[in-house]
Image (cartoon, rainbow, N blue to C red; front, side, top):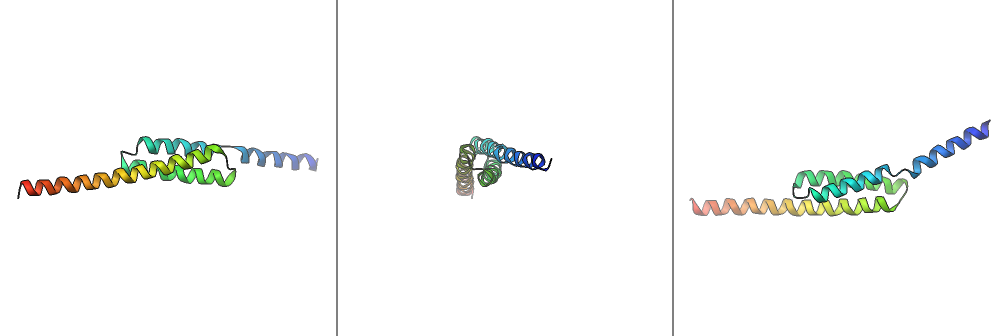
Length: 103
């Protein structure tokens, strides 16, 4: 009777370790951060959440899905930061041109 209980506990732990929930979530959020990188704040937040999920999955049980989620999240974060910087410079240039045209 005790042996059966122990084996059920081991099976439950194995099922939890083999799940890819965080990895799939990280991958989906990483792809979303790449798609929405032109919306800098949204893409940045989604990429950071995807990165957290991917790191958590890599800590539980490393697999290719978690690695892909990690990579796509990093790419999405970088693209979001580039777009954010580009938009800030664009706004500054527009303000400078307007101040030159209308003194």
